[in-house]
Length: 113
Length: 113
Image 1 (cartoon, rainbow over the protein chains, first blue to last red):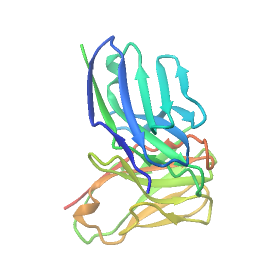
Image 2: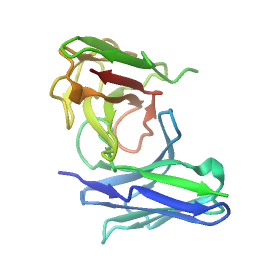
Image 3: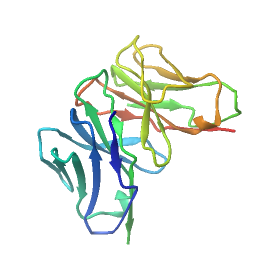
Image 4: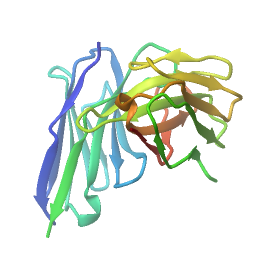
């Protein structure tokens, strides 16, 4: 079955870049997503990338996709304390009913002053 | 625009008790989902409903039942709660399959003692 893996923790200094990595196993994934979860809240979509793209940039966020290695990364430029949260990578398959997202374990990003 | 609303926000149950978690969305979405979030395990899909009148099992359906009452509402029932069902439960909805953003509720923190 599908499997999505992430490292559990990342700590960076304010102003530095953060890079959160994710690997997935389902080669039929069509869309890959990054969600953000702030403390005590639900998940919120940050950005997504279609599987025929290599890169997507959206303001401070850059998503890189290496389809051959099934590796996805999220780079946050000029990381701020407000970026402290849990970041989830997710993928959805080519087939299947509904938007059956498979989530990674989440990476807790801590931004230090 | 309320988005996805879940009730209750917190609940403590004794082993063997039953309860229903309620979820409603006001975005006219076709698909709705129930996930559980456990530390170090990301979000796992319990059940989903691709459209009104249909429901399907996700990754971890045992011990749960669902009901898609109408297009707006999707409830999750625990018939006989067990300590292993202590978790944070999230309801989500999306317009349809494919590249569609999933919108999440704020979560229900359930403790079974």
